[in-house]
Length: 380
Ligand code: MG
Image (cartoon, rainbow, N blue to C red; front, side, top):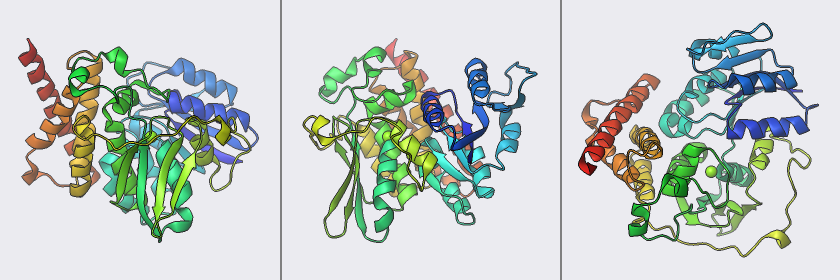
């Protein structure tokens, strides 16, 4: 039996991971479960799978239990990261860099559904991986597709082509995009996901983050984006002879989740099986960089690397939550990220250690917040 620990067990990906494990109970033993603070849901899952150790990222959570051993806050959660075969990371946000580094140190494989860990701290993660037997198995659907396609061709691939649905505003003009509501932005055409990632799909910052994520996973800067509104092709890998490999299926996160759980084996029908007869017409478009400056920003950060992706990720997070709270308009999200990248004084910043990058992350959030306040003042 594979021993598994899950961080972010009560979120959208966490719940679907539990769903897959429920179908294959004889193959997996959940050793611990961690969530931010949703103890009701976490206890319910822990009871069902007979898990004794549960953790909460929120260390101020006032919770006691006779039934479970409780781990609160970073240091206690890190104690959990041992004697398992796979750490499943399905949080959003930057917290998970700590358990990921601990897992790498302990030679534990990681199923990674979190983008921020690689986008913001990719350099540190890569350095740690050099001295470890850990493998990162991506759960993000595009990267899972590429991971599956690229394995036999690591020396012979030319280019990665990420597919993007284009989000709910693909066919709006820039002017029409100015006044879209939070509600409009939360309507994703093909995938059902959490709020932060749904807004990121509408701005295409999700794809921007995935470009950087792909760089750190597959070690290439030759990364293209194609708009594919049906989300049937999860990504392409182009080989040096021009062959284009693709990974197809209906949008269903249980497939990449099942693959990450079972790698290098495969599970028997973790989800419904698709047939090409079931697909509608597949279309492909060039992304519009004027409408979606997020992609331009991503390629700029890909060129620069170092702490630039850290700034992009942190300022985007502040901008998205500010939009969700009604503080700024949809297209201000681009402004906040661009301005934060402009304003950070790069001369005194380093990118050598985790502390350096955490400092950049924090600084970016402070600056992004002040840009949000300025935009609010100008609107009054
Ligand atoms: Mg994705």
